[in-house]
Image 1 (tube, one colour):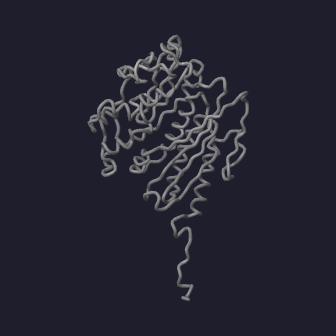
Image 2 (cartoon, rainbow, N blue to C red):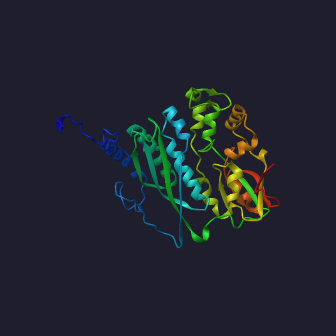
Image 3 (cartoon, rainbow, N blue to C red):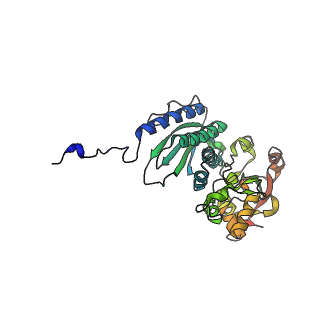
Length: 344
């Protein structure tokens, strides 16, 4: 047997995982997350699960969703700016459950990195907490994982899980939509969190990220600033209008043609007029730079509309009077072919 003193000790830190650093990061997270707690939160961060007491509902139905930020994270990493990416995640998840009329209750996050960097995690959680506070949602728990060799150095993944609630008799699921109803669009704040793989290819961002710091006159700011504009949240502006709404479609991956049909009952389609809203300049820039045809643009991007609302034609004026940025963009019609969405 050789001298054991000459054998290097195997430790988790030597393998690339620093438990002490992770514990310090969790303490930073607790400070920000606690600011989002409501009286319904029954456990502090650090317990094995987050407990939330459901109060004040007669026939509560829980609504849940999980999603990630996608390759928008690569833009954040290229610019070393991480304080808005958490906002993206919360807003995306809130919008998804809100399409059923649900209000957000609590949120959990999952952050995984090759090596945990306290300042970066703190910036991410700052955005998560700020967005949760904005919509009255408790950041009740989550997980930080250090996984060397699984993620490229300096990169990470960010995923969110949300739970909301809606009274059973107030669920919005599109079943009441009928021919003659109106389609109203609410503007997006840009790309939101979809289409970034195509954008990165069009601008060759991965090979030469310097383009992110280029100022584009039509944007009025740099490409990087435009691409990191946070995902808009529609819950605060629409929650008081829910009694007038028959259906809501969050326009994410798949664009208008891929998302609007998800709320349309059988037998109806939607006709959407492309010139009825103002197209943000970022989409024209992408299309020109990448020589992309219209069909592909509408299939990949939200094209300036982040949420579509369906309501009775008689309710259009009342609904739009409280939504100054809203535009009447189409109508529900009888379906005569295979297409569920007709762009004209």
